[in-house]
Structures are given as structure tokens and as C-alpha cells.
Length: 265
Ligand code: ADP
Ligand code: MG
Image 1 (cartoon, protein in one colour):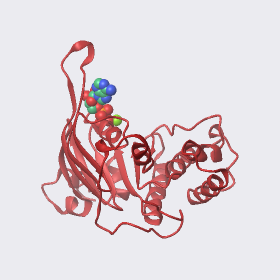
Image 2 (cartoon, rainbow, N blue to C red):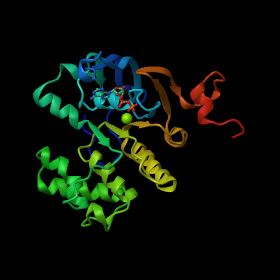
Image 3 (cartoon, helix red, strand yellow):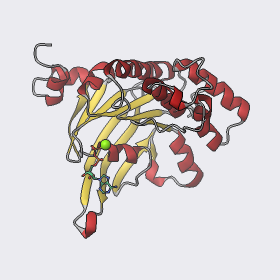
Image 4 (cartoon, rainbow, N blue to C red):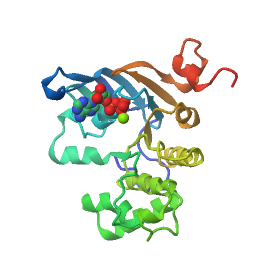
């Protein structure tokens, strides 16, 4: 799926189409010291429509990072399936798998920038790995720097940037290969509240302008309130609640809805 010009209008994909389908996903890890297995994900079913900003919340240890690492192909599911734009990821190998990986960009809590490279160098890095030519890399990096609001900082090193600016680089880098999905793993947890809001607004703008589907993993309910269109709540490796934010908030029995809109708000 080619998104064409980065800053142009979105091309393919009808609204309402499913971008991600997770079907009975199980992930177990061997227990420490030969102890019993840890069942990190106990049969996850999830549907994320194209163009959504989907929040996944849950307490520490509930399986959020494991789910995200299955989605971006860093972990192999023990059983179950993940479909990306209709393609079963478990059936891909070789060059197909590499190109599927490029359809998903990840933004990390600790930014994970290369400290010996400038802003441009960081954003171009995934394109170098993908074998994109220099002129094309430069023009994409320039458009992305503009999009994330870092014009003038092209030659700065990460150590010369604030946390919020570093995360803008992280977002630009994640978008460099023109992914269909942007995964954010606690992407604002290291930032102060004002910077968090600015980064979330940027993520919403990226979603709107590029049509990228966004999955936000967070333990902060304020994040859901500000940008998400739908959400799921994870507990001990299971999804215990999911739906559109407007429906969750309207539903009197929804713990998630009640938490998103505190009583008296
Ligand atoms: P969260 O991100 O919601 O805090 P995680 O996905 O990191 O949760 O962890 C879910 C469960 O899986 C926890 O019990 C955790 O200890 C376990 N777990 C995660 N990764 C590993 C691993 N590589 N090896 C063993 N256990 C793991
Ligand atoms: Mg985690």
C-alpha cells in the first residue's frame, strides 16, 4: 500500500475497513528458573479500523508491551493470528516479512534515537536500511521535519534537543517509511503534561493529514480522553472492555468510560 506523497491527501483504503485484526492471540514466556509458563496474552481478540486512533490501557504487567511487540513483529505469537490490512503476518517470510515490518512504525517511551546522528540522520536511518536513494531520503526527511515542527533543527544532535523535540524526531523517524500504522508505546510517559499534550496533538495531526492508523499504548487515561477514537482495556492478558470512546463514556456500566470522564467533569 503506497501512501504516495507524504503530505498529500490519503490515497487507498475506504473508511471503516479493518487495518488490524487480532484473532485469539496467545503469547506465553517460559517461567524463570524452569518455573511454570507466564501467559502474557491469554487469547486477545481486537479489531482496529483504518484511520482510527486506538488506545490500549491496562495496569503494569497486563500485557500491553507484549501485545505491541506482537503487532510490530518483535515477538512471535505462541498461537492466534494478526492480520494487517488483510495480510496474515504469520504467513509472511523473507522480503514479504521485511516489507510488512515497514508498514508499522513504532514510537518509544525513551525515544531510542541514535545519539551520534543528527535529526536528519535519525529520520533517514530507516530509509538507508530500506535502501532508499539519497535524494529521496532527503526530500522525505525534509517533509517530515516540517510536519513535526522541527524546521531549523535539521543539524542538531539529540542531546541538544528537549524531550518533546526528541519525541518529534522519534515520530518523524517512525513515519519515514510511510507506514500504514503508527504504534506508540508509552510515547508520552517521559514527558511533562504540557509537552504530552503537544505530542498528542501532533499524533492527531499526523493521523488526520496522513491517514495513518494509530495505536497508543498507555497507562494514562488522559491520553485516551485527548486523542483516542476507540479503546480497549487489558487486564492480566485479556481484553476486559473495548469500544468507541463516545460509546464507553455514554455507557453507565463502563469502568473505562467512567474513568475517562470523572464524576463531576
Ligand atoms: P505491560 O506492558 O502491560 O506492563 P508486559 O507485556 O510487559 O506488560 O508483561 C506481561 C506479562 O508478561 C508480565 O507478567 C511479564 O512479567 C511477562 N513478560 C513480558 N515479557 C517477558 C519475557 N520476555 N520473558 C518472560 N516474561 C515476560
Ligand atoms: Mg509495558
